[in-house]
Length: 334
Image (cartoon, rainbow, N blue to C red; front, side, top):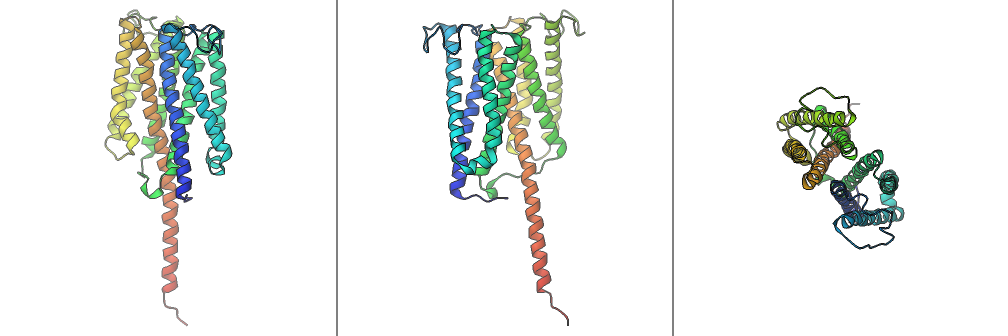
């Protein structure tokens, strides 16, 4: 394993902080976008990238929400440009992060185009859903880079290395992927105005059978995924609580089942109280928090596996060197 100097680790530490800010802004944008959607403010600025032809228009609540969403997005763009400049100027950063930062730049470019099309195509459902899914992909890459930079900035002797069974690692990764899919389904339910397609819960018009109507089918699919995730998280938390895990995975084991229950509760509130703005916005924010916890745990568990691979090699080499020294000290016979 490469040993970095204190100066090099400081560079990684600064880069990690920059990426953490970018990931935090992206999380905030996802939540703010949910509020824009829930309050029907998505077309409050009918043009793009300006708002009524101005950088700072006259405000009402809806115009401010849409305008502020764009301002935060522009701030995120500035952070990513700063990260790109740092990468180009530092050979140390280019080696481990060139590919990931290039991928994030592509995803950010797609996100900007989708943001414009969302307005210009008058909230086309496919475009709105793709806007959310691409934001999650962009967020995933940023978190991955931030955690990797933090790991490189930390001295190897102080890093947490805990061997974890393959079944637990695979379980966390699968659950993270399923949560990503569930958020995508939820975004499609919202963009197609299917949130109230089934007026009762847990049935749809008194039936558990998947209805032929697309909005109702989407709503029931979303509910079925929620039930599956609840069962999955409870099982994973039960097994995970019995073994030693890295701190991020321990946190997920404790919090994820509670957040899934809260998510189902928010979904019921949305149905029975006809999509109140606060509950609708909080529904996606809580889902994003769930995904963040699982993503952090999954990346950490993958890194733990890689770290133990290096430790095993190091121990093997040390044992081999010790064996050679022992043989060299044996008396020779002539």
